[in-house]
Image (cartoon, rainbow, N blue to C red; front, side):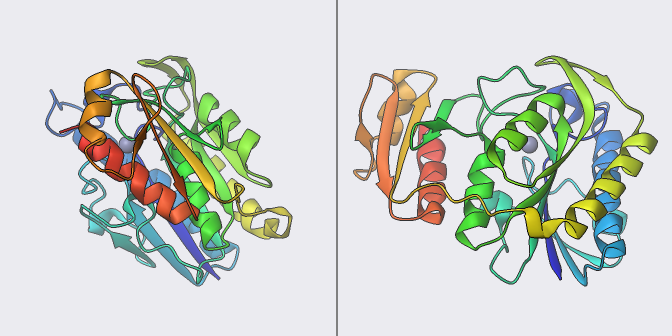
Length: 272
Ligand SMILES: [Zn+2]
């Protein structure tokens, strides 16, 4: 049984501020939190191995995607480090995996969660697949669904936990902190969250028969609302995108992987 772990940083135990997640921005705490990132991941890896996983692939999915140090990761896991990657937060995921874990995830742009955003807090206000607003949990779950793989575990704050439970059939969630706002959280101690994550990872794999891959109806209508009209104008340079509103672009995708990759192109163009 192969388990794929995508690890972001905003939903890691104790994180409540961008400065704790960014090595370049007044980063007095970054080294501390990159170590906690590895610890939350390792708890999920340990739970997976105890439940019978034979292979675990961890993909560093935050910022530069060079946060988790290879020596900090569980020795039986492999680590994808660095960027850009063709499939970004789900690089390396394919039909050879039986489960996806999302560790340290955050809620979607527009929600009240800690450090909420969808790929780019600077440019993107909302992303919709078939009229449903999705954050990174939903977008990456759709790619996993494209390969027939269910998301079994999501860890982060209470807001992303609700977002995941609303969207994904059979998912287990671990709330490592309660959101008090976008920049404040009431946090459990990492020793406790590690126990909760390890236990939930094992339980999730044991109960995986009840989980379903996330499969939005195809073809997918994708809409992206940007923060201002200039972002939409920059992304509109690619003729695949249709301008449907003052700040909105749309396109239709035959499958979720194409939708995901094109949405990322639009966000990248908008950010130029
Ligand atoms: Zn991140």
